[in-house]
Length: 125
Image (cartoon, rainbow, N blue to C red; front, side, top):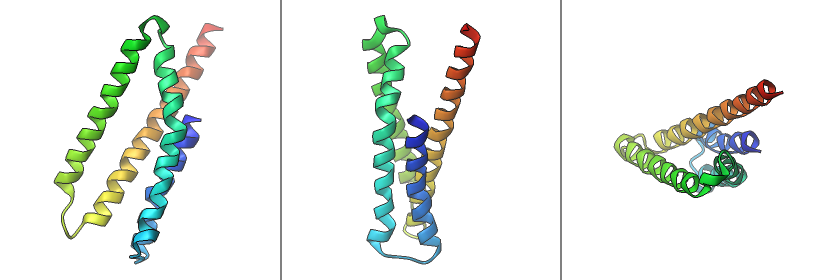
């Protein structure tokens, strides 16, 4: 579920960049596909939270707090980077590139988590 959610989330900024490079400057056409980021996050976050909380059930409260703090810190960091990179001339391109890079990084992390889970289940059997 996490990998499917991340693929959907990656498709939003990719579509936006494709439209931008095709010289489509309609606000709805450019920002509409960003809805896919929200849908992808909606598919990913429940599985990610369940995975974080299930590693050590006796520490579920700490895991929930740490997962929330990491989410907020990541958002603050990306917002700062985006604010530093965006200019009037590159705003649409830079914004969608940053969105695509962050969603692609999350996809890579989901794939690595799935591989680690598969490896640990093979090792225990």
